[in-house]
Structures are given as structure tokens and as C-alpha cells.
Image (cartoon, rainbow, N blue to C red; front, side, top):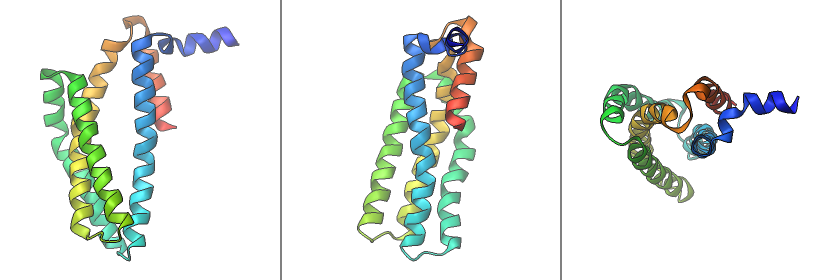
Length: 155
């Protein structure tokens, strides 16, 4: 059984992929909690469900609109740099949201602007991330690597 498990998790034996997997899994966990925290923050400040819809749309619309541009940039620029830059933008947006929520000065436009920035940054991060996988794992383990990342992100 242990041998079978090691074969299935084979890509994690490769240092570069293991580092990417740890970062991606941690990021996916944070992304999953962000939506829940954002919902509680918007509704907790006395905003309506319609306001929450606007905030969530402010995230999704730029993510969809900029995804193709993000893919083009991911093919032309260093993927690692795009991912780091995107994460810095997303981190700054999260800090703005946290300050707005904890100081109870959370005006709707602040939540919408931070969500817009986060969504746009995600549109650049995702294609760069996907394109980076083949660069971090051997060709024979690429399918397993994609499956391992998908499983951990879905979880």
C-alpha cells in the first residue's frame, strides 16, 4: 500500500513541483476562505445581499475579462514573476478588505475596488500557474502532477 501511495504521489518527490504544490495548496485554502470571510464582512457591516452580489461580481467580471490577457502574458513573460506580482496585488487587496472590515468603515466601493483588483490579479495568476507545472516536474509525471494539484485545490 505504501508503495502504491508513493507512486501516486510521485510528483511530490520532485523538489520544484513539491514547492509549487505547497504554495498552490496553501493559496487555494486561502482563496476558499476569502469568499466566506468576504460574505460575513459585507453582511456584517449591514449591507444587503444585493451589495454582496455586487462585490462578488466585482471579483468575477475582471477575472473572466482579463483571463485571455493573462494567458498571453503568461506565455510571453516569466511565469514566476507574474505569479508573484499577482499574489502581491491579491495580498494588498486582502489587507484593504481587512482594514475596511475591522474598522467598520467598509464602504461598498472599497469592497468592490479590492475585489476588482483581486479578480484581475487572479486572471493573470491562473494561466501562469498552469503553464508553470510542466516546468517543475518531469514529463513522465506531468499527468500525475496535474491530478495531484487538482485534487488538493478541489479539497
